[in-house]
Length: 402
Image 1 (cartoon, rainbow, N blue to C red):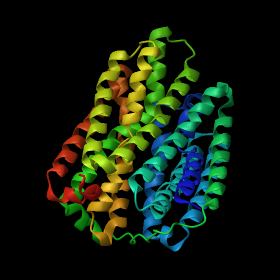
Image 2 (cartoon, helix red, strand yellow; image 1 turned 180 degrees about the vertical axis):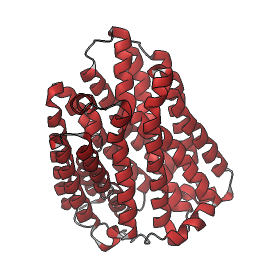
Image 3 (cartoon, rainbow, N blue to C red; image 1 turned 135 degrees about the vertical axis):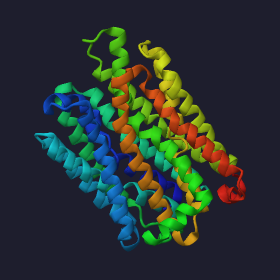
Image 4 (cartoon, rainbow, N blue to C red; image 1 turned 90 degrees about the horizontal axis):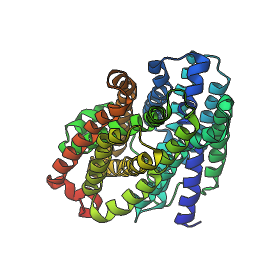
């Protein structure tokens, strides 16, 4: 089987397997009504997934599961657990069991996302940035898919969205088993070591790459989580508070989040040619500008608002895979696995804060200008990546194309 065919199968498998991620967020308006949730409690539907992912990633790295087990089987098994947990949310009668199932969903998806990238890296030596960009694009589209399902069903049929996401994860888990092996270039990652963390954190170049990643993550998941509410509130401001805008908000959210797949492909394509600091800085400059400008079009017709949101959707994730690639190139070779685990864990922990913060900001200043606080992250991220570009270690990036 050729590497490109493997990538096609793997990308489709990951697209399907990642559907549970935003499945509960997609039906949040229905859960707010059925479970009588406050805005802060609603945020935990996504925060719990982030925390579960962090816990799952740390456990997987500590036990070196991706090294001791076949990465393909780990992805398949984890996808089945995520599907079961998503069905648990559908059958839950309240927020307590729902949050527990969402924590389990996040932990399981930690066995889908990173091992999937490991398989892609194992099949590609040349064009690895492009291959990982394609894979992250598929993950992005898969994460957005529940919003498309939500748009296509009545509001009272919210359980269908969760069931479809669960069945999608099952299909993705089975599909990945068609990949014959973990690839001719597969190499085991070093086991996670707490003793290595201080050494990594003291490395100036790695610290700057991580700071850029944290700036990116400050914006990304808060935007993905709350853009459906922003669009709905914008439409209500235009049409009236009683207007039924749930379906159109779900469709716009699918388009905005799903458009990130294009950004991932472009980011992977150009980072190997133009340099990682260039691509990440340009992407964050564009996405941060969108965060500042989107309030100007709040309440405007979707024909005016949607194009800006689509530009935001493309740019906000175009740099995502390149931060991981940068750390893998800059970190001490003995501790690449530890460095990537630290980066991912810190990033997803930060998203918990911003996901929780944004509705509180909206309550204080209104949804119109709430998204502007997300521009803080890209601004810091651009500074970090340009500072990294000036350091001699940056010549290790992308074969010298820093």
